[in-house]
Image (cartoon, rainbow, N blue to C red; front, side, top):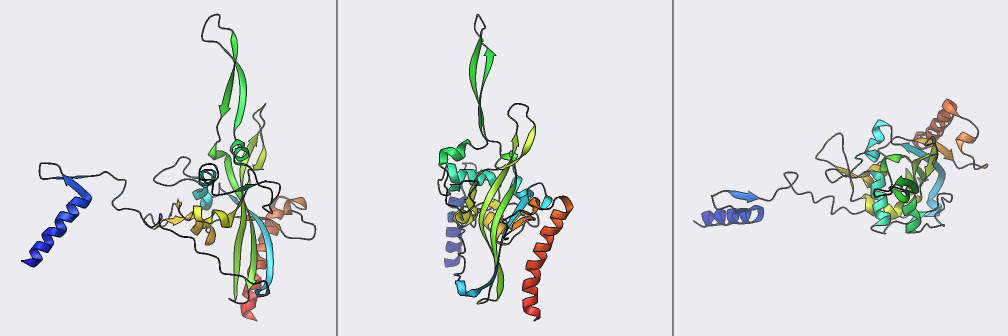
Length: 286
């Protein structure tokens, strides 16, 4: 008898939690997009970096690289163009964190040392345009009047992302590790008069450690398993993206494109990747 009472009590609690009686013996459920409540993403916390001592760093490389959103593996940065199923693209997340939440600081594009800050209003103007046009008046005598036209920011204009990162070997833990320092979204630039494409331009440097707690709560589409969503923080920390090296710290402080171009530039970047890989490999072979 006690078991029956307990079973009925649990059933009543379940009906109260998930719906209300509609008067005809059925249960009215609140509509939701899915069959379970997603709580893991909201409760995610950033895993802090291990503390590093200068004496434990035996080798280090500073690398600048580019992530092209047009590559298939990198399309999770570009899509969706509009928020869909709780997902947003990379630049929408960054802009919201800077303009709305005010929890990420933008830095000047010409200084990747994170010293020259941009104001929120200056960042908001990037990618937007205000123009004036003469248009006929809708009322007699239909004389032309000047009208101000504001062109909003277009997320689809951001086609790539530049990363500044440090690779180093930690002898205390005997591992090769990479720490992303900053990221620079790159957008297309067009001539205001002719509309011709003029190249790519940076928007603002973002200090990655400051933005990690934002990325840790934003889901990325997992092409392998829909139920196991990952976050943008997972994407960066696990390096689940494709990229090409633009520059490695050197005595001349030159980009690869300054002394070679085309296929040769790609080969130089791949050679740098191999050198870093072989260093760790050789540590264990000796």
